[in-house]
Length: 117
Length: 115
Image 1 (cartoon, rainbow over the protein chains, first blue to last red):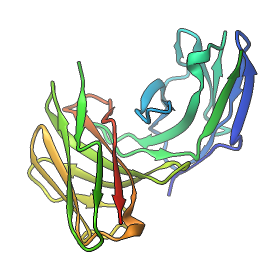
Image 2: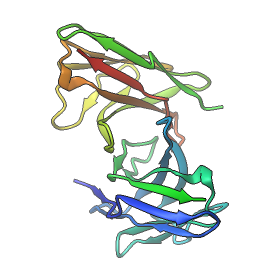
Image 3: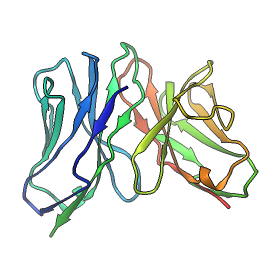
Image 4: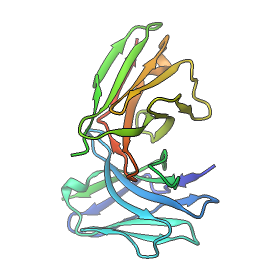
């Protein structure tokens, strides 16, 4: 079974600084997807960024970027120029690639990100 | 676009009764919907995968007779918690997947409290 591990229960960063959230995973598959989701206090899940395992290039979305190390099974999220609105729970998630639509997600335990003004 | 709704957003029921939670994709057709459960201050756990017109696939450890899932149409899936007990109290979140697009869109969740 696939597992996702987030070893940082909580992280704190000053506004405008950069923070990196860690995630490791375990799988025997070669094709899969990795995600970072944000869950604010409203509890609505928001997709931050997605990485396809077959792509060597790291995904980026504005201030958010990932460091995907397939051999090491590591998938960290870097948030640049942190903003107060970035404060939330961040979940790393894994999904198998089924060739058609989406598969169910396996989530890590989450990292609570605090932004200090 | 790509909006998923859940109804109700919060429900309180008495122990022993059943409660139904609806998940709707409002502006797209969803061939697959997923149901997750989230305990307070914890992560999301996949409960089951439902495909329109076929039986749901439940994850190991999820009681299929307690958590009945029906994917009645391409825009609606329902989760019925039967004979609810206080330990079923949780936050239930659905997500929907459009046909042949690798994307999951999440609903806002339903808080279930069983007294």
